[in-house]
Length: 318
Image (cartoon, rainbow, N blue to C red; front, side, top):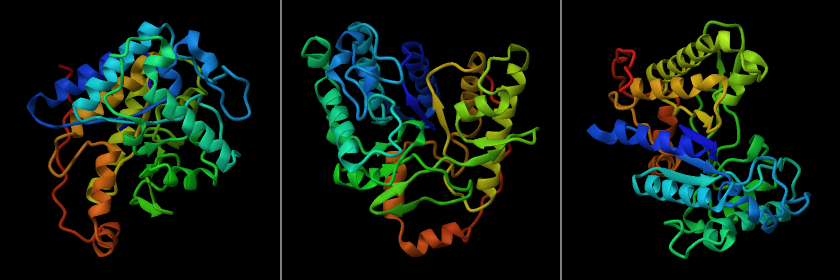
């Protein structure tokens, strides 16, 4: 389970508290946060960034607000990183790089590294306001809009990344390693109780269910459909070939927050069940690297002892 953009401070706080509560009785859940560089550039510092093919100071999403807000994000990021969650890259300006050249991707990734490593300088903050890791420590990438052009992957590999999470694969597909990078892909899912299908990401549900329009009278139904869809995804893979699940959400609240609630309910219901690990993409890459080709082939075929499907009980909110 991963999150993109990562702007809203309220959501940083909410997920920090949620994960801490979940992990009181053991290591039940760890998230990956694909952080946009603009989250760590204050509005007043926006002219320090220039993305490929765009004017200086432009981003398709908001910059980080006041410098104090940037400092608060740094605090949340450091605390979550220290607690075992993963911080990964979502580039800087949330620009569509589908047709970018290798040089343009290198430009964007260099800009991202500068933001991570110079957050205090960029925002006029105290030298003590710094991230607890440098950009070289970051191992994962998800392209904005999932717009990963062919020139991206060589640049990611050369820059030290281990995986990309920008593509789409069947729901029961085990990850592939292509050109030295693991591909951790979102899944197409049939929306429970409907004839529609969408990707395993909240914005895609928002589009499929309501064409990205708030519909207060339908919000409870939409949240219930998302939860049921994720549970179907889980049960099918749990009793099948155990391919990892890939779920992506955003910090922004859509449909009155029902998608946030559905994801948290899903996590309460499945994380910690027998033979289930709700973990980061970095840890998944560790697992995948440790598999022999023979073992991975057996997993893809479902050739392993199967535990009985656990009884899923509706989780109560704490």
